[in-house]
Length: 352
Image (cartoon, rainbow, N blue to C red; front, side, top):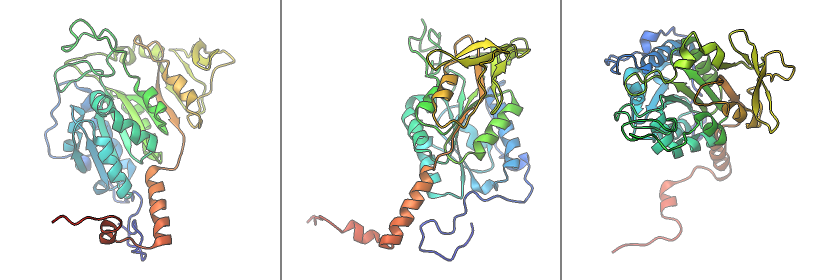
């Protein structure tokens, strides 16, 4: 931390996410704990990609904090040689909010899953996003409850046969990207566990964003939902289905970029020929989230056209910055507060 002369200020001495010139490697971020997920789990690829990315972030590992809830993904803090907090089911965004608001010198990450983050933790997730707390949320979506043995999750497709829905789920699934955009998230993106290059690009963009960043990661569960995203991974089909979003470039896809997207009649997006004059040029910085929301609604169970990349990156003052400014303004006008005076002010009672 950097020392400052003004010790009366509540955040004096805290430097916003300091950087280091000391060379760090992926090995510096690997703990001595044995990594234990099921063989073939997509979490291995995500962990390796994340550890390899962190050195280029340039943040000292003692200024990095990984906070998780409950689930397979929640083991992440054990495997990272940083500070970490394995919290309770669904509450990681709430704990991360408190930490990020009180310690702006830290880079705070939340690791959660589709069950942990969208079921019991759904309320905490949407409020962290709407407040625009300066935290980065990685949501591993395998469309199943893996740790508790294969029950259907909030993202499981309708009709899904699982241990808790033996004749098929009746629920319509959440669309995590749509949910995040509806909550007012200022950064929303999607990537895939097995595509390290794309994963790194997306996480780098999330890191550069000042505010809450939500990244959905399609992640394979080889035991309870194997090959759920195979159409998006197979070399025979992925080019025809993946819509790669690149800021400032026309949205075209297909093996020969023979397909594109254009605005539809009611404000949505629809497929068109790649050379159609109405092909949309992707702009992630559009302040109105309607366009990004329209992109998110392209998803379907057949993965006919599935966008990946950054849907939205629209800057807005963060909650923690507003809080710091408010505290500093009150302190400037009223001086330092006194806890004892506060507790004994107003109506008080003596119990005898």
